[in-house]
Length: 399
Image 1 (spheres, one colour):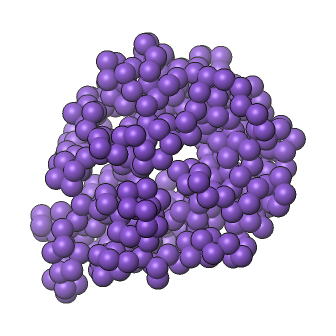
Image 2 (cartoon, one colour):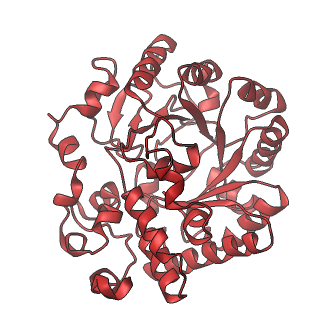
């Protein structure tokens, strides 16, 4: 996760994280990515059921009952363990998490145990009553997925009216006083929607947006040919940076982030250098604190059936199941060779990743994407769009 507004517009300084000792137990939510202990943010896919039919769904969700979901009591035991372990955030996802009737009770329990509870949703089921319920339990944030404006979004989501209902969900959250933001997965079929998404942020007074790079998992594997080229990715990043800067200049600051491609960090830093920004050195400090991709270390996933994964996209490999062993034990155990290597994966990457001068702040980017594209878990991530010159230029020329 790369904070474009934090880095490029200076809404966060290195001293902000240092003030809290970079301890995830005490850091405000917007500074968690700079923690030193990297206690995992845990994505819990509470259900595989969903009322939409998204063409890029990593969970391959459908509108049907799936067997073997963790029961309510099993979920409470999971949350007890996560709280004791020190997980700072539980992100309730799916499928569509609001299709699970006890979602408010589970999220409220997480909050009562001292964790931040957030949900990732398509937004179509958030009525004013649901929003008030989510506010009452202390939910920290609602991330609502949109893939463009109405025609494009509804085509991606596979259900007419999904866009309209998502906007109604956003309005309900805003009226209830819940922080709400957008989640947008970039690809060739919707990249031209980015300006419209920024317009929507402004028109609907939405404070946050995350632009996700495509990961080849689940139904998203079928879209590998629709991923942005390196040139198109750079153009998209420049557009996101420019629109973020424009909002800040006009006194309409938004929290803008990109997710699932840590090449974005060096890209922002190099752009600041080209522009002669005095902020470049501070950005480098923040990128070092961030430490790049953290799958298997600073982010983890528990599936609907209790299986533990390195992140929500890595469903083809499980480290164990919370029905047999607590998450905390699975996560800290190193008997699984992959878990052991992910804790220090910079030692195992190959090719241009191994030679890259940004390795310490990128950490080899997304291993699951490299595996999906090449069959080799430790090969270079094909979505890295930095040129050979940008990754090998002597460091003294960039400071």
